[in-house]
Amino acid sequence: MWKWIGGILLAVIVCLMAAAWWGFKKVSGSFEPDGSVRVAIAAPPGRVFASLSDADSAATWMASGSKISTGKHGPFGIGDSIRIEIRSVGTGRPVTWKISNVVPGQSISMQIGSPDPKHPFVATRRDSIAQAGDSTIVFDRITSVPAPTGTAEQMMLQMFKFQSKVELINLKSRIEGKQARF
Image 1 (cartoon, one colour):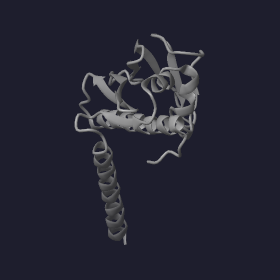
Image 2 (spheres, rainbow, N blue to C red):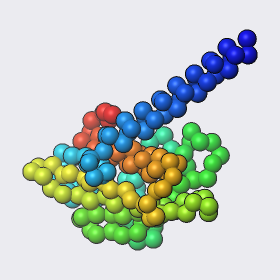
Image 3 (cartoon, rainbow, N blue to C red):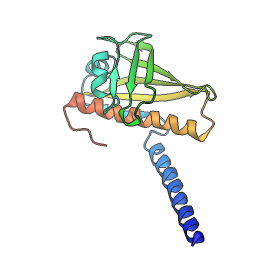
C-alpha cells in the first residue's frame, strides 16, 4: 500500500512541477522578443503620460486588488515612492517602487530592491511612450542588476514583467473606458 501512496505522491509532484514550468514558459512567451511589454492605447501621448506619471492616477491602474499609496498628489518626481500592499499575500512586507527618473512627456523609471540580503538585486522598470498615428504605444522594459542567475530570481523578474503587462492593460482600459481583457 505504501508503494501506491508513494507512487501517487510522486506523480502529483511531477505534474505540479510540469505545470509550473509550462506556466513559466507561457508567461515568458507573452512578451516581446527583447523581453519588453508593449501596449497600444487609443489616446494622445500627453494624456497617456499624464496617467502614467501621476500619483493620484497610479492607484486606479497599478496592482489591481491591492492597496496603493503614494504619499503625495500630482505628478511623480525623482525620489517619490509607490507602496503596494498585496492583499492576497496577507501580512507580508509591502512592495515599494522608488521613482528614479522622469523625462516629461517621454518616460518614467522606477526601481525596487530585493528584500533578501543573501540575493541582492535591483529591478528597474522603465515606461516609455511613442506616438503611432492617433494612438500611443507604451513600452515597458524591466531589467535587473545583477542579471538573474537562479530560477527564483528569474521567476521574480518574470513576475514583475507580467505584473507590468497587467497594469498597462488596466491603464489602457481606464483611458479608453473599456473593460480590461487579458
